[in-house]
Length: 275
Ligand code: FES
Image (cartoon, rainbow, N blue to C red; front, top):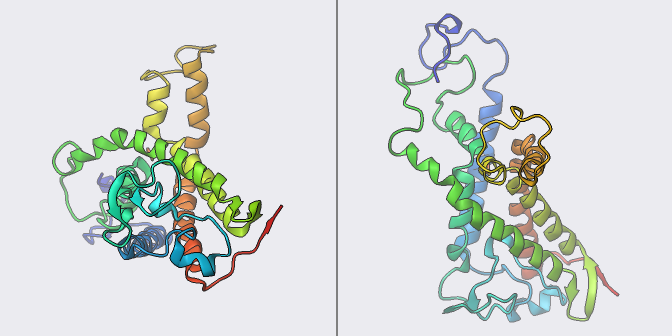
């Protein structure tokens, strides 16, 4: 939305009377998003070194059982990890399994209310920041194509909730080594990944509306102690810091992929003990 006229410098795009470093947050966000998009695209494209349980990783992986979150759940034949392994009758090496999975979390994040605000500012300068002039005068919100498609966010929610389940399952299996149950750095990395994705997903605005029963005003009904209200309170708790969880979970999922990749390749050794 355009800034109020009286706050504008008449210098056109980026014109403002603000004297603070308003351009720093959108610049950092643009760098962060771009770095994640480049890394995740590459990591999904290569289609290898995503699971330390694969035979080719056995020598380097020291009996670990770590699956990259970009490739979870592992669906192709030859990925003996979880109950969905092999449901797609293709062998690993023919196509990257990540392509069957990443559309869901990427769609969920791309249409997330927080991320929309962030990339509208950082990539489209629309607006670049509060009280800073933007490139166009008309504002149609998200009522016309293509931005009206952002409304499909709610339909990505079930897939993201399922992903929290899959990643929790992976985190549990990360405590299982070829010699028995134990704990390693990778177990902690993948556990934190599942926790952070849960904190982000459980704070979703669409989830809050859904579990609250679609009501528009809870405070209008003092003393409401229904399950819907308690569920709404729970989601609201995580929703209050949705931006924080969005960034932490985004950073950590890339880090978890990188960690699994480096262990699988033998570049680093996983520290772990088996009980
Ligand atoms: S609004 Fe951000 S995940 Fe739904």
